[in-house]
Structures are given as C-alpha cells and as structure tokens.
Length: 528
Figure (cartoon, rainbow, N blue to C red):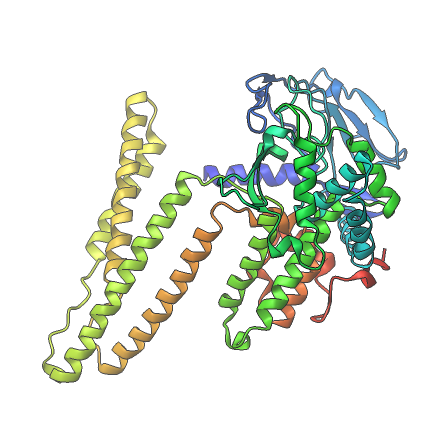
C-alpha cells in the first residue's frame, strides 16, 4: 500500500512538472526534481569531496518561458523565482548556479524529446561526413609526422593519437578545483613508460597510464611496431620515435606536447572540416568499428544457422571492441561477483541434473516399468510455512510502534526471506524430476531441454564475465550510430529489444525506420 502511494505521488508530480509545450508540441522534461542538499562526492579523488551541497532556493533559479505562457507557480511559501526570461535561442527551461564549483546547472528536455533526437541525428551525420574525408585527413597528419618543425610534428602526433587511440583533447586543470584528469594535450612524461616489459632490442611498446574523463583509469600497453599500427602506412613506428623525442631531457612532471595547446589542436581540427572535434573522431571510430566488426561476423561460416540469442552474443562482442577502444570501463561490484558465483553454482546443478536424467533414461531402457525412478517431493508444506512466516512478518511490521517491536519485525522479515530462498533452492534442486513416473519419451525430451538450458546459461555467464569490467552502455548511448544496430537487427531477424533497452528505444526512436541494408557512410552526411 505504501509503495502504491509513493508511486501515485511520483506520477502526480511527473504529470504536473514533467511535460512542456514547445512550438505546439508536448515534450517530456528531463530533470524536473531539484537535487537535495548533501555531501559532494565528485568523480575519483576530487579535491572538493565532502563539501556541503547547499539547498537551492527559488531566488537562485532563472525560469525561461514564452512571453505568452503562464509562469509556473513557486510552491515554496514566502519565496519567488529569481529571474524570468523569454529566450527562444536556448533549449534550457530553468537555470541555477551550484555552490561547489560555481557551475551553471540546467533543467532541459528529456533524452527522447524531438530536440535531442535532431541533435543526436546531426551528431552522427557529422561523424559520417568523416567517412569521405578521413583518408585526406590521415594523409595530411602522416606527412607532418616527420616535419622538421617541432610544433607541426607535435600537432601531427596528437592527431594520430586522437584518431587511432581515441583519446580526448584534454586541457589544463586547476587541481585545487578539479580532479587531475588527463587528455592528449595534457599528457605528462610520467604517463608514458617506454618498453614496460624490459624486452630491449627494437621494442616499440609504450605503456600509457593516466586518469581520463570522470577519473577513469586509462592503462594500455601500445605496441607501435605491431601490424595494427604499421599496415597501410600506419606510421606507428614513427609515432613511437616522436614520443621518444618529445620526452627526451624532460622531467616527469613536464608536458609531452609542450608546443601544443588544446586551442591550437581544436582550431586545426576545425580548419580541416567544419565542426570537426576529437569527439567527432571518437563517434566516427566507434560507429565504423561497430559496423566493421558486425560485417566480419556475418561473413563467418554458419552465421545464418545461429539463433537470435547467439547473434546477440556476437553483437555484444562487437560492442565490447568499441568500449575498449573508447576506454569505457566500470568497477566490478560485490553484487556482480556474487551474481556470477550464483550463476556458476546453478550451472553446475543443471549439469548434475542432466547426468541424473541420462541415468534415469538408461534405467527405463534396460528395466522398463520395473525401473525405480526418484520422484519430486511435494513442496506444499514448505511453501505454506514460508508464506505464513512472510505474512506474519508483514503484520508485525505494520503494527510495530516501539523500537523493540520494529527490531523484532525486521528479524522476522529476514527469517521469512531465508525460508523463501530455501523454498526456491529446493524447487530448483528437484526441477528435473517428475511428480509421477515418467516414460522414455518424456525423459528424452527433458534431456534435450536441459542441454538447451545449459548452453543458454553458459552463454549468459560468458557474456556477463566478459563484460563485467567494460561498460557497453556508454558507447551505445553516446558514440555508436543507433541506425547501425537497428539495420543489423532487421537484417539478421534479431528483436531490437535484445540490443536496446526501452530507454534507448525511446531516445533513438528517430532511427527505427532505417532499412536493413542501411550503412554508415559519407552519403548519409548529406542529410544534415
């Protein structure tokens, strides 16, 4: 009952504040709830961690509405909005300044709004424009990798790094105000370790280790002499020589690109192609990598015989390649480890059950009706006992008023949960058995069913284990053109729900109409 009341209150607030009328169209609002006061956490080792985020008063909030629109009523008694604006050139609906970093915060339209959809479509079309320009851009920076001018050589090396390693531009940080995160232009000598495994000779490896955006660790050993970076005149070995040159006779705290600033690099990117930024490179590389990896899988022998679930595993493998390229990581929680362990235990139980089913089949085949077959125990009493305990705990919780009664109710709830879990485990342990004696056909069918269950669970465990440290969602949400995934699903008869969550399907509803043969190339850039 309490949960239903909370849901009703939440829905009432959403219908009151969660929608806006824009150009005559009803659009969903993103963040209409103001953050409550609390301790500031920040990302990584933020220097301002622990400072108090103050409550935002209505007087700090600026409202942006049409001149003809009624101003939303301030529902805090004795207060009023700080400022009223009628600015049609911006998308935000409200603005205020938070007290920790003195940054402007905004209330915007939701991710699935038409404004965000147009913006996303334009972003991916701009990245697709690179398909037609990438050869010219690469030829230009490769030519300058051996330039006599130090400035041009550093600029060309930074371009190579942004293109091939998908690093962000990076800028100077005030480490008293922000965490010490690093990008391409702000790499220091201490972030590079030459020949990390002390192999000597003509080793061309560099270990890059630094904190990137949101204090996520970037730690990769790049072999600049490998085929990946040298084939098709990739110039990997020259980039290695340039890094050696840029780091020579420098202290560990000095910049690698000391003759290059973020503004120089950004200006150069814009001079090559209108609107080109490092993020456009990342979006292009992410989308192109996904498309290429998916095409590789489709060319494999026996691809058409795979089930939808097996095809999704291949899609996730391609997605993982993109996430690794973009350094999209996540920390492994205790809950994830426990869940994987639980799945492993279930898998072993299923395998044991299949062995027992095979023994039952052997008995029935050799002994016929005389075969003694183990039957499933009736769980009715166990279920009734657990249900009674749960009902009792619920009643105790509702009636509890004193501290002792509340503790007793909590203990009763925990006890009922343990009993409920024991019932589920008992049912799972005997899931392969029958209540009455089975015949040979029933046993054969169940063995086939268990073979499929084991195969499915093994795939599930492999998928979860492979992706436990990689965040597949970030690249799906921000970097991979959704039309590639939609076209792939249509072409391979995979339900889009298996690849995109409801949130993503709502966000990318503009991409759902593409045909199965759609491709990410320079032609779609002409669409704007």
